[in-house]
Image 1 (cartoon, rainbow, N blue to C red):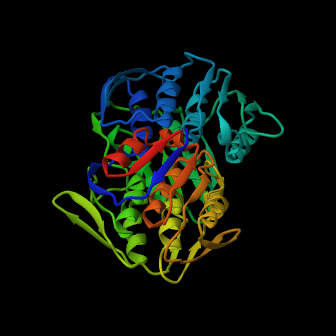
Image 2 (cartoon, rainbow, N blue to C red):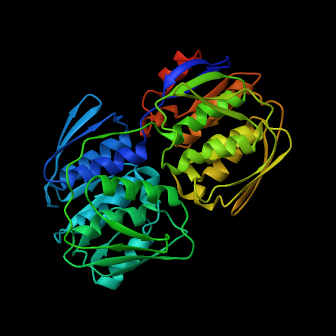
Image 3 (spheres, rainbow, N blue to C red):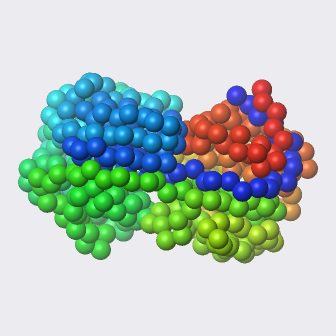
Length: 421
């Protein structure tokens, strides 16, 4: 599906979608607890559906009742020999170690860019532990494994995706012996690890965090059932807060001010660019502002890159985005793709391997751009239409279903004028 946006001011109050990061984690933890848990406020995006189906394949019983899930877990067992992660990196990387608690052969499959997202951290573990595995020479998926995890010392590089760490933290407490996850070098994306530790604690699993340098994990632990309501997603606020800075009047409901979410950094980043953020009466919003160029570090929050690239492109002066290399291994290379698409609309951006240099312009012109099948690219570029002097057509705009299935309905409810093709 393609959409054409006829630029209009956006105004209104909306409930922000539930956190995808917390939804994944809560579903997995509940699926490993033997009594029933109720997980409330879940949006059934493609990624979340992939995790639900993946945990069903590993023995969980999950009943969907609107936005509520009733989950009765079990010990890890194979109901299916194939786990389909679709396009979800979280589903794939979280579930690989969990599946390997059981020693039976299993296959992991996925779609589109996910087949090329790295799994080397797990392959190194497999090699050390003698776990047999195979995958095509030119891609990471499909992945076939045979063998199981054993307790011990696991080393993970701190500058790769925290999803590998989270996968191990879910699985290792279920093994017979004690384990340690050692982090080699500084740990990036600490906020995502904090989310994992918080969910694990709620579901009865204890892990000792030694200053993010190592995690000590007792074996033979049991997950306990827990009723959990998923809070609003800070990564999704980014698009609407950026819109607010550029002149929209959008107030957001459902955001927890003292959240553990690492993407809460959006509040700091937008203010660094000169905008004003307000939390009032349980509403979050950004006031229209003349934003200025600034330096922003993305080592802890790569998902904020697309939205902030749009805002920096329309801010006065020069912005330096540093530690952006992890933006390159998402649904697309978000550094190059955002540069290419925004430059089609009149932006000026230079890129280096780990840096973006963005030269602000006062306005963009309309045009035709490609989402690169990346939900965050599509939503970020939609907000760029607020400062355009012509219509904007986004190709493959239905990719938003990965995380925000009703995004375009919400965009229209806020006053957006959209034509669908």
